Length: 231
Image (cartoon, rainbow, N blue to C red; front, side, top):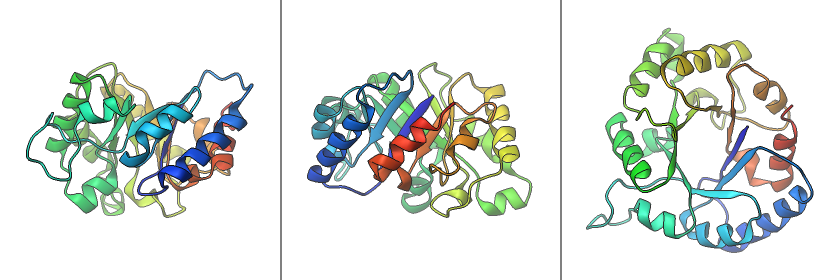
C-alpha cells in the first residue's frame, strides 16, 4: 500500500520538523511494508528528508525544464538534490487554479522520469462531468497523456470530493480504478477527503493500492491512524 501525504501550502520548516519527530515516534517499532511519502512545501524538503526515518519525501510540483529564465518555477534536478524521490503532477488544484493542462502534465511526467523522480499523476472528473455521465471519457482522455512507464503512479481524485468532506462511493471508486488498470499497468491511489473514519473502507476496495491524503495528513496522529487502517 502507498500512503502519500500532500501538505499543500501548509507548515513551516519548524512545524515540519516537529511533525517528523512525532511520526517517527509513532512508527518506531512498527513493521510495515507500506510505502509512505510526505509532500511538504518546497522550503521544507531538505529538512524533512533529513529528519524522517523510513519515510520518503516528494515535491508537490516541478517545471519540465532543467534550468532557465522561469521565475518562480523549480526544476526536477533541484528537488532531487533537496531530497525528493517523488513528485505530484497534475493535481486538481494545479489544473483548476494555475491552468495545468494534459499537455503540461505529460511534459512534467517525462521530465520527472528522466531525472529519476517517481511521478504521482493525478486525474479525475468534475461534478458536472460525472453528472453528465462523462467520467470514463474524461479519465480515458487524461490517461492518454500519461507515459506508460513502470515507475508511474496514478492518483484518482474526483474533483468534487477534494476538501469537501465528501468521498466517492465504493462502487464509483472501484469502477474507475478497474478502468484505469485496464489501460495502464501502474499502482492506482484514491484521493478525495480520505480520513481515518473512511480509510479502512476505501483501502479495502478492489483495485485501490493506497491513498493520496490532503488535509487529514497534516496531523501526524491522524495520518498514522490512516496507515494503520490498512488491512
